[in-house]
Length: 293
Image (cartoon, rainbow, N blue to C red; front, side, top):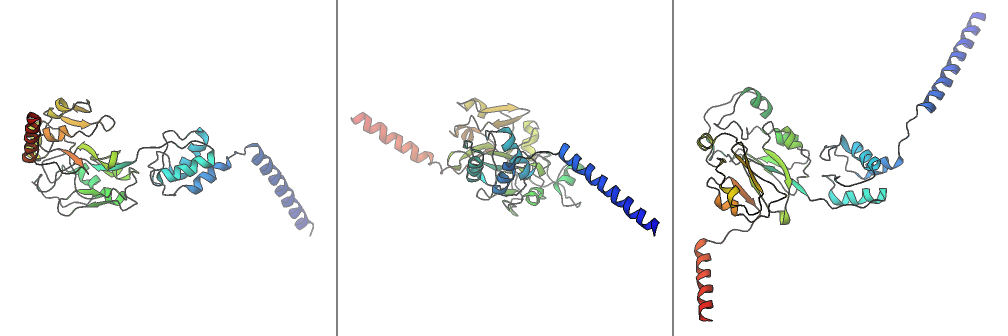
């Protein structure tokens, strides 16, 4: 009986000492967390897509609170309305951020980029890219397996069965960047939507020399530099046989689109151009009326 009593007392003393040690340790090593982090996290969409540049919504909330500024920060899923609520919680000014969208920089459809081989391996762009050059002569363009589609949480990108290329739904895209990260050939870029959702970009990432590119794809950039020369805003650069349009400098004049001999430059959501015959006729009428006056 004495042995049992001693054992019980010993265990009780050990438990008491352990409790005291844990209490002291919890006080000494306690980490204070600003309650506003939880408040900000609650108004975020909890998509945890990483499009904000931070590890999930909790990481973004912590960054907003600790830095004390919302400059350069944006929740791509929630957009400006969510950022306004975050600003209200933190007592900060919500800065307007230009909306962005995922852009597929490859126009090498089945029509423009004929297949020269057949692939029978795993249906994955990542695997195909690491083990195989692709079914076409272009080793830079879209592989067509749809890794980007699988990566999108918002059902904003789909493979077009006719062209074999991914297409982005602008209304559903949050510009989280998951598709861009999933693409092993980096043909998807997150670009500003542009004024009135209009934008101009080079739909090609091929860095081969012009003759090689032209042979592989009829609409690939051949690095001729005509677009660079015609751009009045110095928005286009040419590097490694590939032209690139800087969205921050581009004014959407579309002169480059007309000048490109390959049709590699796309102008999205612009109204159709007037036929040259109509434009010429209008010019003649204006000239005639001016002469009469």
